[in-house]
Image (cartoon, rainbow, N blue to C red; front, side, top):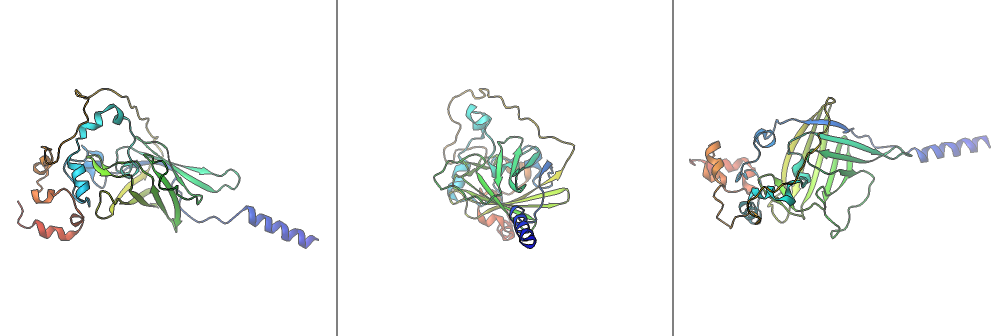
Length: 278
């Protein structure tokens, strides 16, 4: 009887205390480090017409060129959260917290928050993504799984938005894959965005943050005001946007390089096309 009792006790312990996958702890307060795209992330922001390195297709190019960033002054847009793909590139710090099952003490979700965001849960409990017709949100629906020490995240069901704050478009069919890695106090996020509506190829970016125990995520003091003289929706007709080439003179970029994005601009071979450009 004693042996039977010990066997049952051991079996019970193994049942209620499952072996957890060895991952990396990403919880904490993180400060943005602008070692990539300094002007865009910590300077004046993205330049209108600068779509270098973005694999826009014809529809994406048309959507970007006819957009007027003055739409950010519309009351319904002033307090909208950034879409998840752009959040990593936006200004401000980052907070990641853990949701733990109180009984099993297993990690069930990470919660991510930026300056201009809603709560973004990343579910770690193996739940499936909702069906295609389910509601879309600014953050989308995210699930994560471990690949060694790397956290791999898949996000679907995002609202239509933007990849950059110069109105490079993002459709509600887009899917984002993220790869989180941590090297002591440094946090690197690699994102791969596929969008069958606006992109020719996947759009790949990396961003970095540094652990900062002396900071707290700021409150976002959003107040809606009427900024536009006209109540019309800001826009331009195709070929009528007069500001798309202003950034060329500022940065000394040849006009040929401002072909408004495309998959070929992502690769070193594109430099051969610019030989002799002035």
